[in-house]
Amino acid sequence: MRVDLLYGKGTLPLDLPDAWDVTVIEKAAMPTLSDPAGAVTEALARPIGAPPLADSAVGAKTACILICDVTRPVPNGLLLPPLVRTLLDAGVPAEGITVLIATGLHRPNLGEERVEVVGDRWVLDTVRVENHDALDDDAHVDLGPTATGTPVRLDRRFVEADIRIATGLVEPHFMAGWSGGRKVIAPGVAHKDTITTFHNHRFMSHPRAVNCVLDGNPLHREQLAIVEKVGGALALNVVIDDRRRPCAVTYGEIVASHLAAVDFVRDYATVPVPRRFRTVVTSAAGYPLDKTYYQTVKGMVGPLDILENGGDLIIASECSEGMGSPAYVEAQRRLLSKGVDGFLEDIARKDFADIDEWQTQMQTRTMRRGRIHLHAPALRDGLALTGVARAPDLAAAVRASVARSGDRAVAVVPEGPYVIPVLAEDAA
Image (cartoon, rainbow, N blue to C red):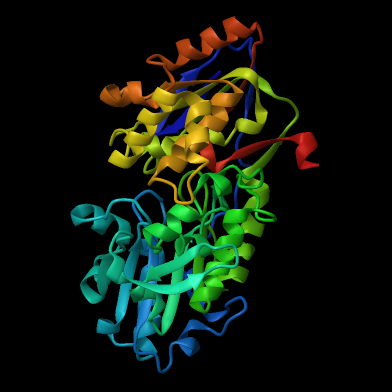
């Protein structure tokens, strides 16, 4: 049989013997919006837990709209024009509106990449579009610590705006449970000290800091506390299918509107599976998530619940931009030099994580469960820093895994971390 994995801007075919017991784990068909633009307009007029945006914006002089950076396939060209037009019609001056790219600690999005992220030339020509910089001390407002001690410093442009709106994609997230909503604020426009505190070993090692879990998730708890510190916000959330088509739009008070989107997508994105497998094949979800090895780690963690101890996790990722940040490369070097246990012992002693080392920490979850095999022909120079096995021929890697285990049952997750398989007994 043939299975197509999301890979780069297309798919990567994987041919498997018909005699094998292949379980393809994917979402049920999602209903798509027949009129996405109309759905956004309707959401803005009929919000959840807040007045319509046209009413909220009356008398406002400034507004800040957060958007995700280039690592997320958010249809900003759909979301931003009605947001900006509604603000303008309500009397907010164009010079008072800022679209702020919530980069967290990622690099800025500039030039043609910025055009791609915004997705609409009129928006670029009408209002300011700027990048967040988590390392710029003066660009942040100190709001004091949360109850658990996380320092809360957020981008001044967002904190001091009369209207604060976060936009984003709601999908599984391997640390915060679900992306979107409050996560676009923190880490999206948070200072380095805020991000590196609630991404330290203590938070990341918590058993509830996993995909599709909000209750008891310490990252989610801190994000909600940070929303309270800033005085609340609004959010426009979108859910998409595996072909990047909009399926749902919610708008309103940031927490309530985000939960509404989570409620919609949860039963599609989490798929009960009756057993664990010795061989699991997955992807890094294709472009833009699979541009770096850093983001590829999400795909390694997604199917962890169904990987048998000592099994093989085989993942395909384009990695067109290489490993990721220099800070992440340094974290990977420490993993290789110290080993899994030594690396974890080292980072457990710190209140502030080093930038991007949390991604290396998440990789160790899968390394402790089984063997990781990476198909990423474009990576080349960085391959030795991954700490995983090379799989230049994807089909051959799968055949070798089946030969090692003697078990012809294979699980395939074509959409990578956008679909989270869970053992049926756990789901129940």
